[in-house]
Length: 211
Image 1 (cartoon, one colour):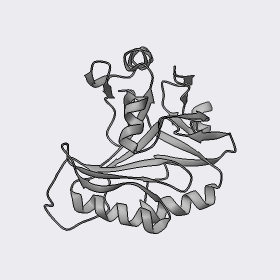
Image 2 (cartoon, one colour; image 1 turned 90 degrees about the vertical axis):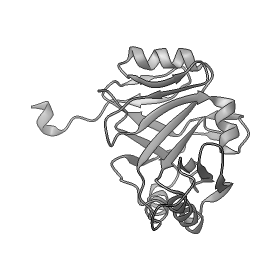
Image 3 (cartoon, one colour; image 1 turned 135 degrees about the horizontal axis):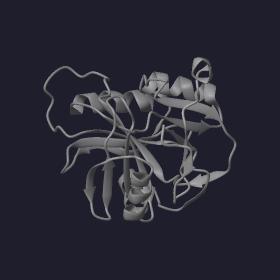
């Protein structure tokens, strides 16, 4: 099954960003990568990354760790109709949703992340869904022109599509933005640039694969 193997965040200071993500989330550097960029960007970059956890206590633990490491709080961690979660913005500008579908704790809190979801805010969900389907991704869930979730291999980055304005509202920021998205997807179905300007690169070949 084709999937998104990793995402690369383009940041002004990779060393500082690596320190933040290690302290705040302890993320796998093979799934969320960093590289330097000074490409102009302003306002909402059109995407969020979600860290999905098992229970509210886990969300609270990561939320506190992120704020302690230097993140800004966009939305406090609290209960909602769909579960429990909050939103923070990393010092490099990336918006992170920290969420769980559970409303009750069932054990001691941990900082274990069960899943990473990349949500792209797009202008036309149906058209962008078709674009990705034509490049080999499989739809897992689809709710008309509002939301699409693609299936993926275990351990991959789950890709979802949402209306840009709706995603900005969820993130707690104005929808306006311009310039670079400052995120690059990596998948065997790349390289390409999608209708909203998001770039996907193919995995780099290892030396033995070139022989």
